[in-house]
Image (cartoon, rainbow, N blue to C red):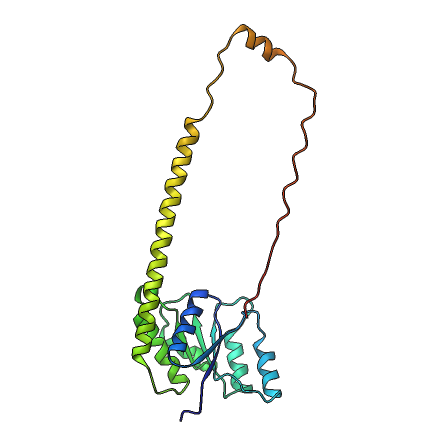
Length: 226
C-alpha cells in the first residue's frame, strides 16, 4: 500500500555518493534531504515525534562516520521508532557479502548497500535503487527516468575525469619547463682576479639587514552544509 509521498533523510559523508543518491531518488519522485554528519539523529527524531511532526520514511546512513555506531543506532531506532526504516550504506566497499548484510539486518537495519561504482554506474545504481524502493514500499520503478539520469551523470563524470587528467598532464609539463628554464638562468661564477680577491678580503658591512616583513595572516572559514 502506497500512502503518499516518501521522504528519505540521508547522511552520506562522501560527496559523490550523496549526490548520486539525491539525483537518483529525485528521478523516482522521492524527496531526499542531506543532513550533516554531525547531526544528532536520536535527538532529532525524538523532538520530531514529540512535536507531532512527520518522520522520514527511511534513514539512508553511511556506516563510515567517526564516532558513530551504526548498529547501535539501528537497534535504538527499531525499539523507539519502528516505523522509520534504516538503510545502511558502505561508501568504501563495492561488494557486501551475505553474512555482512544478514548481520546488519539482525541489528535492525532494513538493508546494507555497497557504494556506487563509477566504472559500472548504471548497473550498481539500478540494483541499489530497486532495493531501496522495496524498503520504501514503492512498487513503481521508473526505469526510463533512471537510465536517462544515469547516462547524463556518467557523461558528466567522464568529462570531469578527462578534464582532471588533462589538467594533471599540463601541470606536470609546466613544472618540467619551469625547472629547465630555471637551470638555464643560473648565473655563472665571476672570474677570479686580484681586484676581486682584495674585494673578498673586506669584512662584511655592519649595516643590519631590515627585518623580514611578517607573513600575512591566514583567514579560515569553516562551513557546515545542511
